[in-house]
Length: 594
Image 1 (cartoon, rainbow, N blue to C red):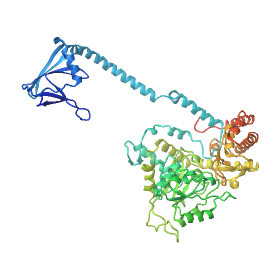
Image 2: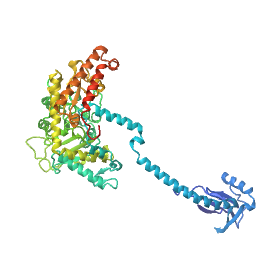
Image 3: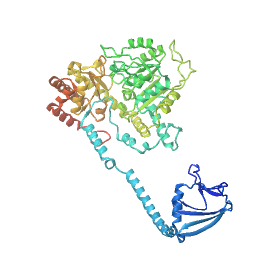
Image 4: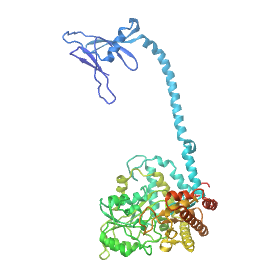
């Protein structure tokens, strides 16, 4: 409260300061005035030694007028003298109403009771918070719990053949659902924007060390960033760090098996991904007769287009990559060479597919799929001195130059594109990468590849057409056009039969609306313990699904509405679903009880 003297009115002004030190307009009190606060009503008697009739008293605010009327109606014995004092030469008497004073003793008693009530209330609030924080999912949100249980049963009772899906172990699930999700940790280890991150730093540092070890990389020559939320995020961070908007990139055409994050356009020219929106993209394609990458055409197109980043790797390419040839082409056109090994990173770690690290400048990957880790992305980049020039090859230093990818890529990940990393994911990734370095994991990846080859052989024996005629990795592409089927229709029939596959475009399709094939992969069911003979059975199941789809199309037509109507209460679908679920029930689902 601010007390000031006004010489003009010979009165006393009272002002109240707010919590931000901004003074409210003074309240002018003359002679006998009453001021009501939130706690009590007080009256001030001010005896001024000077009265100047030429200065009439200022108007009284309405709230004080109300108090003044109340004071007039108050009986003299309603007031009790409290204290007299002087301020700025004025004599002041502070009085309180008797009824307020009388109630003070009772309020003291009630306040003590209130204190006890307040204490009880605080304890009740603490218990409420504890109850909220320790509720099980089933109790906290029965709706979500029920849906999650249904999804768990779906995964257990079905055959999972999507090439980009897998099952994680119990330890990975525990890390993902741990208290690490509570911590915020923008920045890199040792340079965070928040305190309390020393244990988070230890986890991320260990994860980076394990990532390098999993692929046999020297920390003097390679760096790694484990913070990207996905491989698409990782790829875009590379573009952001090394390119300017409008710079050129070149990756595999989407109908040929490329990923949309490599710069995807629809046939009508519409830009689909951020890579094609912010950068200029010209894709290379596979040979339409063989299904393999046409390296001669690739080189011709790259030398004409001159991309700044040349990308090898794709989402739906069943063969290995000639990284040495890619390196030659990149050097000729002066491009950085980026490998997106998202689909085959597990096979590369187990040395079941060729390694891109000898030839590429940057390598990105997802952390799930064949790695069997949590969903996320990872970036490997060269560091240290560049190798000496070899002949007339471009993009090679003289031994004194150093790679500058580390600072640019790390800055692109954060703060340019992301906020705080997901620490629970990084811990889960560290666990998965530890497993990748074991002999058991190598045996697992060997079995994944054997199972893919067994599945391919079984389908080929049943007169199914596979792109490239087989596979070098964990996936195969089934061309359905000789069945007169679309991938979308077969995917739907398989789903109703408790088999999951995904539709894909084939390299000479007209567009993405009616893709002519499905992609089938073996990692997930291999994780459940399936061997070659089991995939022979699965080949029979997916072929039977294709026959059912063909029959429904023949009877009801290809249009979505009529085709879906033909699937309702279909006896063939019910019979196949029963067989599939009985088969799948033999195999446990890793990380969870069946």
